[in-house]
Length: 171
Image 1 (tube, helix red, strand yellow):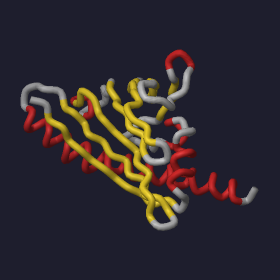
Image 2 (cartoon, rainbow, N blue to C red):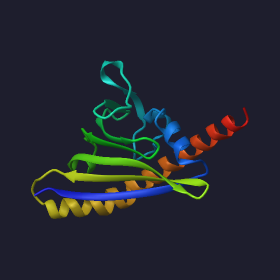
Image 3 (cartoon, one colour):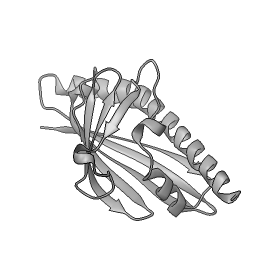
């Protein structure tokens, strides 16, 4: 029986949702994903066949400096509101226990700003010691390592959006 473990983080950005969405959908993963001693940096990303990662069914490969290649498939786009995708190919310690992950970025209006909510649902591979593996995955990987990664990535994204909004407003 598969186990699904979820996590979500949010960050407020001082720009309207449509603008946050527009900026986000034109970024490449290597421009905003956080990296450090625990999370390898994105080395490159590409869309097989040279297309764009902007329509449901589109795929992109994200190569990390540790050699991992994650394949992402765009599963849903709601213009100005949401981008959802499925990732597979995780091989790093602990996260390699997952068969795939479903994730989304949502852009929620909040007065004169936007609440960006990034959520993940990791489906763990069936196998021995599932209860113990699920506990380690949730309490070590999700609550410590991935939460930190998500918060720092959202902070990076906020800085990029704010900077681009400032430059756009000064024109």
